[in-house]
Image (cartoon, rainbow, N blue to C red; front, top):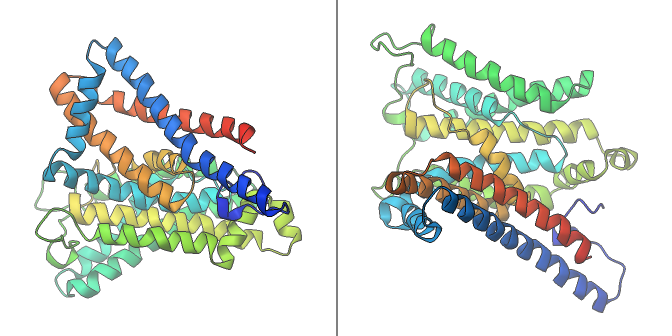
Length: 363
């Protein structure tokens, strides 16, 4: 429909079989080769930065690799880091495919966490986990979706950019959570600004006696679900058509308002789900610092994953490995953890640049 759609399944050609075969090979080469070149270029520039900091880049990258995959504990931590990134990014690619630029994952994360905690604290002493956990999941998704819906309403009704509104809603949600943790929902038995703890039935179960939790199953199930949603269902066709060209989609009889609303609120729902999972497993209560910046990092993961569920799956684990490996690199070499963020940004920039060049060369 437009050259902005880069998935090979979306390419429609009237050429003969030979031309179509070359087109498919060129597209596959671009989809696989460009990200690899971009990642390697980002790591190479990162190596220069490490060298300028006075350390051996090869040794630093080796330590980083060991910190991410050097043993069972390291692999577990990488998985736990990748899960929230994956769920958040899967929601973002649905919004981005419709050209709704959801920069409000953080705020939707907070509101989803709030909804999940309220349900958990209310019913954790009266409901079994098999009922309570699904209720918390549904509440968190509803909380995130409604928070994203505010930006959709302002966009559709008043034409206000969703970029501005979602950024501002991030701050509102964060400070609202801090207020609740200090005043109306504060744990009376604690001196700290935090709510009571989620216990028992409200905690997401772990798997096989490890720290890996059931959120892994949820995240992996969402990968094919989002793929089917975007490429096998009519609503996915509408979302991609709207993102390709709103005017053409409208003339084709598609409900643009419905498509934009669904894409944005679905994105918010998965961001809210991310918040509830993280609070249930890691933080166990609302307090300052419950967000790991997943709403913003998720944007990078979505872009690096080429707005495709499988690509996002790979990118989420890559970013998680890079983050956890940077912690080890910091403890061993004393290099700043922020250097990993610089390398992440460089990788995304190089991937996007490589893709832009590939579009020109491999048409």
